[in-house]
Length: 244
Picture 1 (cartoon, one colour):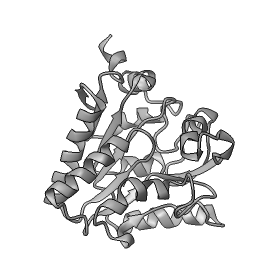
Picture 2 (tube, one colour):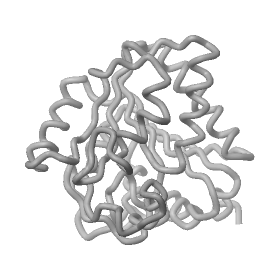
Picture 3 (cartoon, rainbow, N blue to C red):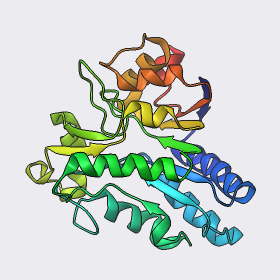
Picture 4 (cartoon, helix red, strand yellow):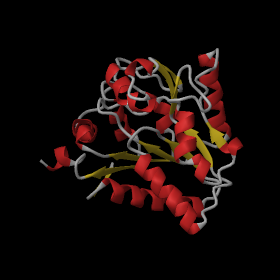
């Protein structure tokens, strides 16, 4: 895995935003895999600013988000669908029909997961997958477990993951759904290129184990070691465990 360390979260976000903007200019029909949560907020701010400054055309871009809470969808409070519209989609020229999202409200989640896999395949697969990492090493909502489902699936969320997402529910952890739909690790690893970003001291242990430990389902991010084109972008706080 290629490692890049930046002096600040903002410097990391600016660099990655410039990389994504260049990829869109070079390949207007690029297919992006996108994350949610605290980590990508700075990236999305930088992307929106670059789009305005450079008049970046998103009309041919296709996107697929990593995950969504079961029971939520569209613009529901706390939904990742709402998060993406507020922080990125409403500010760029991406076409609504080009936005791929899991429907957490589907009455048949297994069928919904199969639909999502078909949609990704029909789009030609994901060209660039952007990821964050949870403090427990989860990627998307692939939580530490004995067996990692390969494809998009329903997952029961760990309590630390629910606590980390309480901010999207007014700080009320009891309002955070206990389950989610998520791309599986094989779906993620099928992307042609992967960029993982991590910022803050809370990610030190997960980053160190991902980079230096063995491949284990107890740290889903470790499976990125199997991918031939992964760039790990860290700020100095998240990289502290590697520099010791």
